[in-house]
Length: 350
Image 1 (cartoon, rainbow, N blue to C red):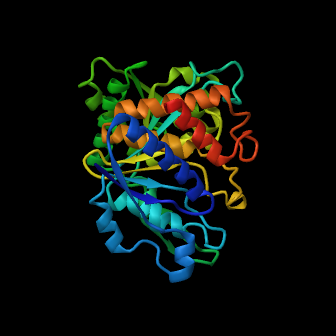
Image 2 (image 1 turned 90 degrees about the vertical axis):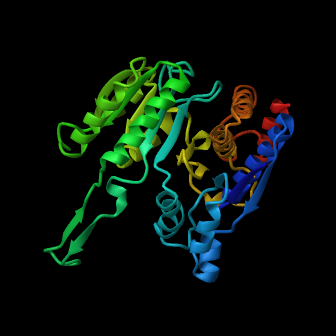
């Protein structure tokens, strides 16, 4: 029995998570395990109604769950940053979810903007450090609003934080067992302090994995090669900001945000899984949003719980739906409703 905390989120988030739960329920029945899903209404509507974002009591409750399943966060009537920092970033930091895991996988039948590239060429993973770097909020402002204003934002990189992220990347690469190569994405020629640490740790840890090739690429070159030769990559490891940037590029070359899923991982604690696309409020209630990113996030959740066969079953079912049914991944142009796409995935599971 697994306990899963569900935060459906804002806009079309609940519609996507509904289909994800539908798929999790079906695969659990097939594989003979059980889960209990407890829903929390944190998001824009609750904030507007009560002024509450994420109470301390809920955060403590989450520590008792096996995983968190999160829908899209973002409400048109709430200033950007309030919900994202108050819910998503707070959960990442407080639960020490120090790895952001982003598969970049092109499914058969899904269009990519890259010429002459297909599923064989676009299949890699980005391991992004998730609790340090520029997103710590270290810094400040002097003489705000004047022409003498000074703004300072500091990137915090600790040996512990870098080492555990890099080690996770090598372990994941070995278990993934594909090209067996880990690429460090950085900027050693300019960010000479932070990425000197990253590079030294990368090679020190890498020596413990003689079966895994080590590679390095500047972040700008990484963006170039992701477009020109994505087949060169297997596992990319990088810091918080660079990871945030290159994974959006990764989502585009795998077909768009409608298929992009991510995990916020604490290997020793509670991890959280989510579709990467926004809440798309203009489509709320129309039953036209693509739920596959949420379903793929559910597959990642299963893998983290150790239900690897169930995760593989979901992944293969999504592959069949993409290859045989969907006209497009875009909302309203799939050829099926949100609920029908979820039903198709369940059909291929069975």
